[in-house]
Image 1 (tube, rainbow, N blue to C red):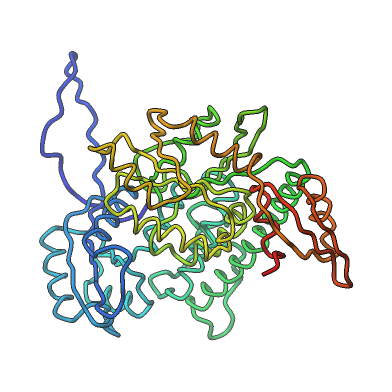
Image 2: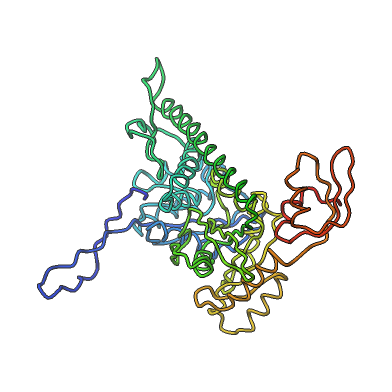
Length: 455
């Protein structure tokens, strides 16, 4: 957690037990002040007020108390301080009045912006941005070695260009364990004229190289696992969606699993895979993936490449949507944008309209469902509509056949054999480059053949 203390006393004395032993008081939480900027030249996914509300939820997830916020509308960021100089003075006054310890900007700050703001605001308040906050939350929720490595890499790549004298003496933190990017190991003695800052930068670069090498091993292991899984012909369904849409709750219901569930952003981070039984004696592997969010840090997307490849290689995506949220369409746009960024835009999608139990009017579900052609309305919490969802998964993975014409190179012998084994071949033509096959394929296999479909 962000190591800044917020000294506030409890306002009420807790009740005493029968033997008059005081109940221990709760530990004081850190205080955060939020800053949001709307740029008139840019189209934002969410209105400024809604984006700040989401930032407040992120702060709450990170264990912070939000004590105030400040907004400004600008044509472009101030080159020096991101917000205008007058707003910086106003921010200083408000932050001191609310006894804020941390200033959180809703947009990613450049290293210069961060340095200038910290210089003006003084040493009593730390300035961070949305990216740093999300990285901190991911560090709290990374429980596996793979997750810890990915988060640590993202943290170091974010910190490196922002390294100043305030970050020096990292070498004193022995070891290079995972999770919170706690230490940088293997730092040698300084050479003639070499500053401590240069030593720290060199140490972080070495640690980044080591983390990338370790993650490449993880990626290779996942690739071998996927190859083995594909040979077993067991379809894979990836649950995707905006954070806190109910993916883990749905997986628990489908697979009778025990994935951690909480009403907070990024409650689960490490991917979880469970077997799900479908009608007709069929099975599928369902994987719960990390939730998406607007302004998802590029450092995280790069660091989580091995995990996100699971989504791109899936046979079907269950896009879990919180249908009760007022920003449902904006959240949906954010998810599809992220899917395109990670190379999963070609995978078939079944929209799962979740939390219909929270709607005041059941007709709302029908109206919203009309905007999603391939969708099923459910309540994962109460088990409503689950059988219809399972039937839709069964139809897509095992019953629905699509007419397709593909040109497969001879090097893709596995795909050629799979078409003959699992598809319905109507015509085969050979040429120098490969095999032209016309026929019908199960919908679940279409994603694998998409690169070879003839226009």
